[in-house]
Length: 366
Image (tube, helix red, strand yellow):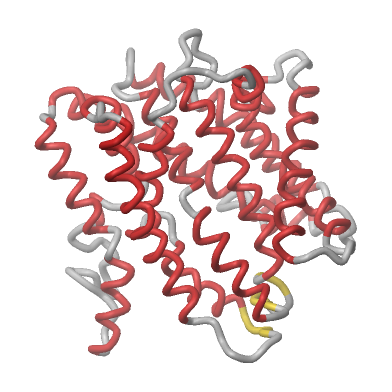
């Protein structure tokens, strides 16, 4: 996330700060349906608030990918130099905080198995650093950027639109698998027990957001009226595709206490590269692009934007401690969710700002 350019793009700063707050709010909502044996929902009211709010927030991570892609493509200079810069800025802090989550217990916990955590890091993130899955994905996106950059520079607008259409089709594959399961086989278009790479595998995933961001930057210059006419219906349709499948799976009897598999099943429509999330992401990006001038509080957003990666890295340590207090105050569920996110955001931002004063801070907060 190259966010220190001298010539800043105003709407990206607003969007980046909004997206990081959305991520914190997502994680503040999780305790209301994840817990117990894996899935725990205390009441119908909690389930409803989880559905209404979280369904609108699933676009947060793809928005980060689009903000990075908007700035970084086409890649300037050699691919090796690009990757070196990206891995220093993003990879080095990732290593530092991955190790910290492996050895430092959460607030109020009884400790962690440091040896097991360090062993697991050879292959993946630890149970206490699940949010860092995002960095693995982002580094993968950076690896592919120099490869697709020559194509990005040469392809026509029509060629980009064709790719985006195929990618949007790939976002429906999870739903197609569900429909195919009615035939007794949930694999589609070439997938099999011996081949997970189906027909649309190579045009699927987060790479679509990379291409869409470049297309918007290069070819979309709509008026506010045109943008609103497209983006608002797109968001509403996307939100419905995200929220309704989750809502329709909610049970009638509470509390719900089941394995994590139940939550995974509920979240099928929430996955980041599914149709509803893709539509809400693109819609919000288009709306933010309408912001062309900074307002009076823009300097604050600019500073928070520069701190956003650091906030992301540290926030789980803070959020766990904050939630232990806000959840005990007897407040309504949506208030607890929002208050937890706001307090976590403020504390994390202050902490990262202080860390930024230290020498070589880019190596541990980006």
